Image (tube, rainbow, N blue to C red; front, side):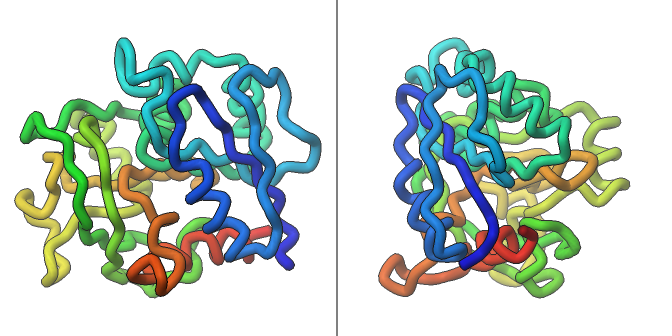
Length: 232
């Protein structure tokens, strides 16, 4: 059993918390705790806080905008300040951006349509707690399901992300090329996921938790959770 202790935050409208719990338990042998959005503090001893996918607060105002101001997010911000691990997937990525824990924003897909499909991502670096079990430059498959996954930031921020190696995953085609057409949502520079400056926070739009068992159709996402288990 891994020493990793994880908690999953549940907001009104969250719908991927069980998928995330399955992935974490498979990788760590330990069941994560569920955290309610009205909680004012995190349980002691948590290593990882996860903001899963869904439609928190019905995506009113902007995706993740209301959730970012929930009581528990103060505790999540404190966890980040202590160097704790945070993973935000899909709506969780949107929440992290709205809370200012990651730069940029997630806007409406370039097609103006909800996308539910598999995509390919290239692992951009492997010396992080989230990606250590992947091979450098690995091409992995992951499902995506979102209407607002178009990552945007101003050019100086994008240049900083590139220059400091903070792009975690990039949409690519089957040849591993990050061409504009490979980003189904139109994300700037094909960015599918980014790290915080200390690489202890990861936000990404596709769902690695939905490919952690052969019965799910593949295991490309499992290495992310195994990396976290080892990081503990």
